[in-house]
Amino acid sequence: MLFKIIHTRSKSSYRPHSDSQFFRTFFEEVEIKFVRDRGLDHAVEKEKNLRPMQNLKILIKSEPSKSLPLSIITQKKDDLKIPIRPIEFIRKYPSIFEEFFPGNVRIHPHVRLTQEVLSLDAEEQLIHQSDSFRRGAADRLLKLLMLCRVYEIPLKLVDRLKWDLGLPDNYIETLVPEFPDYFQVKNVMISSTRSGNVRGSNEDLLELVCWNDELSVSVMENRAMKAESAYPQGSPLKFPLHFSKGFDMDEKLKKLIDVWQKLPYISPYENASHLQPKSGISDRWAVAVLHELLHILVPKKIEQDNILSLGEYLGIRSRFKRALVHHPGIFYLSSKTGTYTVVLREAYKRDVLIEKHPLMDMRNRYIHLMNSVKEAQKGQQVKKVERDVGEDDPSGEEREKGIRLSDSEVEDDSDDEDEETDEAESSKVAHETIAPSKGRGAHSRSSKWKKPLRTTKIARRYPNRTSGRR
Image 1 (cartoon, helix red, strand yellow):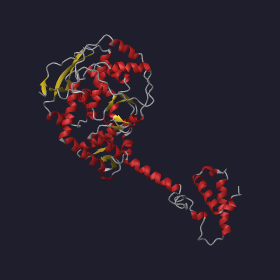
Image 2: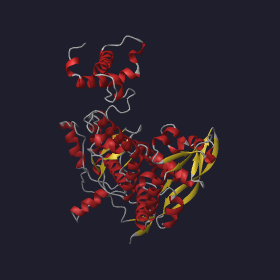
Image 3: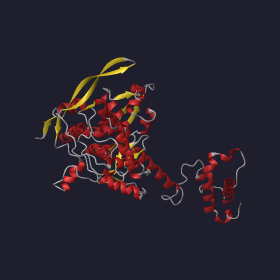
Image 4: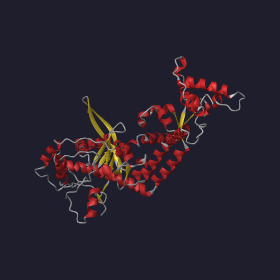
């Protein structure tokens, strides 16, 4: 039977041996140095402004006029998680946002979306509406509920995780009612005591309806069963380890990891409340929970604050925090976005996510569109440099185009003046350019541009007459 009504949760049959407490003490005595991983840092950094852009895009789309006054965006800056001034953020991505003035009255600027980003958004909506995607999103949300020691999570906590879970923005109205056998929303009264007064407040929770035996098998267990059909539950399973280049592992740490990998694997979907909080097996279970959680998430990474918020709600925040710090071969902490981001190492090859997902493909296309203007500007700068060095114009005419003093002022073959007069004027220019200027115009912009061009031009035209002149 695939589903069963929840009554009680089974506990693990494993009981920690006497060396578990020694393992925890031994582990905390080992110094683990942090080594940066450039590939994983780049994987985090390139998505730095993606979520604020998406938040603003969704807000603009929700308006009947499909536009918003800049003043409203400024007021909602914190809710949108815009890291800089909104006007700077909008102008930073002209391929995403357009500024305009309604009625051509240049008083209250408004912001709307470009046609390019609207086209991408239409494709993204088609992905969200597909049956396979909606089923996958519901499965991920169900696995999150089963992963917790309780069968309900506050919606405000789910909202913090919905971006990484790949849930649609309106998942409460669309996704939850579509899967009534998975979960449901309920409202409860929560009492709190402040200053001696008891106060009550309503809170919406997402509640698990039915347990799914098929989905309550972890990634580690699935791998073991594929490799060995008769996999005994509770056997030692080794977590994949990937350390940063340059990570120095001494013999003491290596021995510790070998001992830790031989401890029994406790499924993250099992109730481990009976395990001693500071035992080695408890640490291994906490790692299993984090490992499974990151595998559930679409990008295989998440802000550390969101993980710790979930841990605080479950009462295991300290276990999560220790597991993230003590296992750098499994988890990587990046600080490239101004906050710590937890990355599952095995899910990435350098800065590329190994497992393909249609939602991640769309996000990469958004990033490419956001940076398309920068790439175009960079290409223009490269072309300008090529013109300046004369690669496309050996005669140097294209290189000197745009300078305030044109070629005709130095060399004009169409003039009726004789060569001696032309030479005298050119020599005068060369002397003013080569010799240090002591007047008021010593640092003028024109002399700055003249210096390399005049010297090169005159030396090429009069090689014998300028070689000896100082």
